[in-house]
Length: 331
Image 1 (cartoon, rainbow, N blue to C red):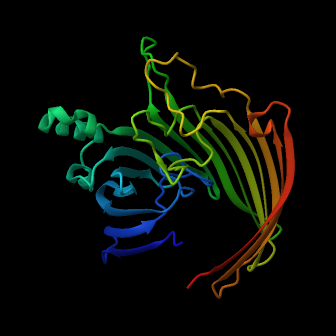
Image 2: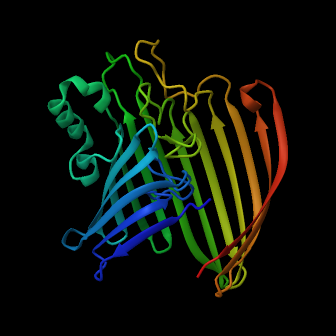
């Protein structure tokens, strides 16, 4: 199956562009995966517009995609990314899940906040408010190059926030912080980075069917909801064509899943704590990569995985080795 099959056009000045087809759409600074739209998600059929606002040092992007065509489950998203100064980028994103046989014009245009789109549709058809109900998520991210070769970044996702204790629904949110860099040691290029991601319970879920899920996987961070993950990585360039790589990670996963949304009227819970018996997974691997200038990219890795409280059974544990071999041809 192809994950990238599309037609695209970019204006001669690079100030605008359009892309239509099937692709892995993603936004945000995350290295492994981001929170609103992640490169770890499955390929979706969509239409995206991009415009560069030179005077404001900003970029605007809109996306309309179909998650499940037969049932009419659609996704709309838009993003504004601003560069206030050299080395600093700030992004604000919004996404909406709605149901329709085709992409709706107000969602497709992408210039109106999606919460207002739902209100406009309710004004037009008051009796169809249940059918026009959407599920909106907001996200913000910052990436800052604090020094040459060193960048820190963070992202916050608000699925459903309730600041008042009188609200009988839990707050659903996620956040991510990271640091990466590159430098030289005795003429050898070294790359490193670390990332921590926390996704609370019920994120990406919906009790009325507007979840952020495609083919059983979240559109955002892959280990979600009800999870915490820390990952570090390092790489060393032995030569312009050979590279050594290594990664290590620790993932804690609670018992809440994508098909277990919070239903209003249920007993209130603290969504910020991991649910039930927490499964802990630790992984480490090392690899080698050959990437000559001719367009051939070959990588091989070997690693080991330890799992405590496997399948959320207290005391159960497993351990297994794994390996990967990848070949890419780039022309």
